Length: 168
Image (cartoon, helix red, strand yellow):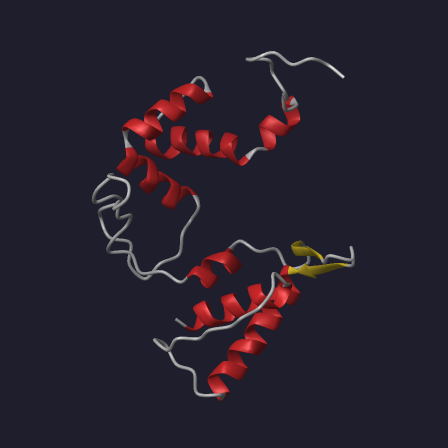
């Protein structure tokens, strides 16, 4: 076992990993769409903490957030607690979760206490969520209703959450 000293590098990603990273894509996107160029990560970090509003607006754009309204203001007050992010935005969490999904790719990997695993593809997650939404609608649940559930950390809890928030 190696003795680590303060400041020792614990891990270094490969060049291929760096090239394929979402952070690398984001830095390239900033250069192309916003005219912002950063030679290294510390420069990006510095810009992000000194320009909170523009940084979070750029994250919204880069991530292609779907919304019926975004609003012009990203951050009302940066005091913590009390900061208000995108106060005029109107969006649906479930819509954004499924917007970037790839049908047969893995969306959930669940392992219970006995080590039994369950894999759920995006296609299966979407189908199960839609089926539960239809059952909720048939039961009379409407936008604005409150729905509560007491569930363990299982895939059905995620499906339930997505089905309910998807209704509005």
